Amino acid sequence: MGYTRQTWYPLAPGGTKITATRLNHMEEGIEAAAATADTAITRLDALTTDSLSDVDTTTTPPVDGQPLVFSAAEDKFIPGTASIDSLSDVDIAGVADGDTLVFDESVGKFLPGNGGGVSVLDDLTDVDTTTTAPIAGDMLIHDGDKWVVFTPATPGIVPPQVYRWTIRGALAVETGKLRYVNETGHDLTITSVRMEIGTAPGSGNVIVDIHKGGTTIFTTQSRRPTGLTSDVATDPNVTVWEAGAFLTMDVDDIGTGTPPVDLVVTVLAIQ
Image 1 (cartoon, one colour):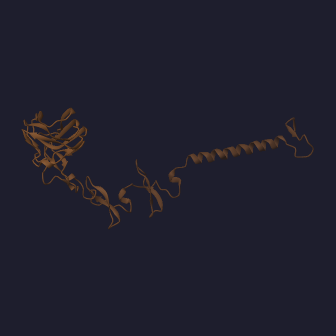
Image 2 (spheres, helix red, strand yellow):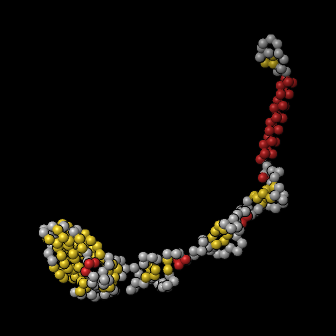
Image 3 (cartoon, one colour):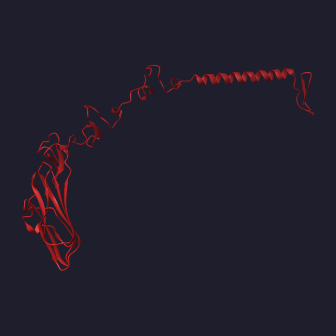
């Protein structure tokens, strides 16, 4: 179409002629629609949570940190308080400092408790701090049945003491090899004697012994470390190694035939 003197004419035959009046009406309609849209947007921006029909934050205004909680009585969401006790399977009546929540099967709820009755070490079935009450510096050691109180000679932890005799080359029966003095200042307890052979004898066993002050700690001689290449004795008859006392090592037997070669004997002692 073309435009001449404020009048629009169709370029093709037929149709409705567009006049200036019609254009003005179109402009007025567009302006009205835009105004209506602006009003709708303004109203949307003005909406709040309280504008919803099932929310009431006017009767009781919320405070910092409050959640919206549904009230069955008012059939609306209103500002409320979040509490674990509001859960149907929790009852915190009588809760005290240090309590934990423990499920009580008889009532089907979590109730205040102390974790099933265990609040101190002695409550554990494998710990005994009642027979001997601990004092400062004590530790717990296992006696084969339970963890019990152990008091070192002086407060603190003393690491295990390791004493080692080494003979290189072919072995021979001999006594009083080397002398180790207990210089810790405390009595020690001998817990084991281990023997290791580099090359086994032609036949028979190697037997070693440990003496304290010249007397065997294996009063029952069958308990001595005995074997072709290795053995450990954990049950000496004499276990106390007094401060200042000395230990020596004996090679009591080397078997028969080709002699064994290289020997290491280790004594482990604890305070």
